[in-house]
Amino acid sequence: MSLSARQLAQAIDHTLLKPEATPADIERLCAEARRHRFWSVCVNPSYVALCRRLLGRSSVRVCTVVGFPLGALPPAAKAWEAARAIRDGAREIDMVVNLGALKGGDEALVLRDIRAVVRACRAGRALCKVIIETALLTDAEKIRACGLCVKAGAGYVKSSTGFSTGGATAADIALMSRAVAGRGLGVKASGGIRTYDDAVAMIEAGATRLGTSASVRILEEARARAALRTR
Image 1 (cartoon, helix red, strand yellow):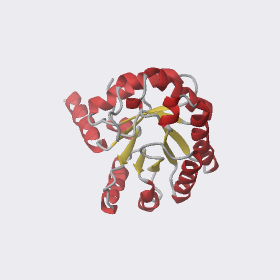
Image 2 (cartoon, helix red, strand yellow; image 1 turned 30 degrees about the vertical axis):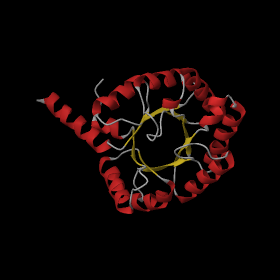
Image 3 (tube, one colour; image 1 turned 90 degrees about the vertical axis):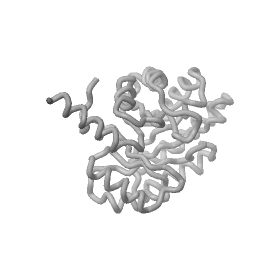
Image 4 (spheres, helix red, strand yellow; image 1 turned 120 degrees about the vertical axis):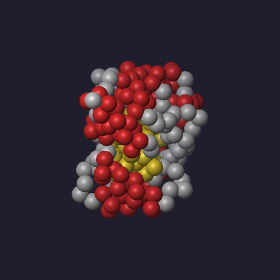
């Protein structure tokens, strides 16, 4: 598979979630997103309003995270966090599922957890993506998590926070893609996507969105390869 820089840009959530990120870092992120026309910027909730101001009327959306990175907040707290971020200008919400409840077999709590954020997103006309943190799950748990995302009405399943023991793998993305096939959900790969080859591998495995902080480098590689092909 060969993907152009434009195709990749429209699949990328240009991400900066480091706790030490400064307003100047966020300004640079938004400037890059406008210049390269990434699908969105993904930032911590405290920077949502700033991103909305910086991006103005551009096509770049603002995405933020909820219950991040552990997923251990109660459903009501996650719903409040999502609603506040939407009021501040977020149009996409990436929530971390309650991993302890999932691994402990409390599917009712996991379902309430996801539904609480999905309802907040629907009320604010925002998209809900659910981070299931694949590095901490067995394959059976990954499949169960995807099924609960479908049942709760989420828009996407997402592999990773990027802050755990591992990020996206092509095998996990393929498994998630099969688990939600025909159910109308997208699949977002995130964590450890640093090169053009990484990005293409995830899309080939079934990812419909990529979360990465190496977005600009990936596009530069895509353009360099395109130039070589036209020589």
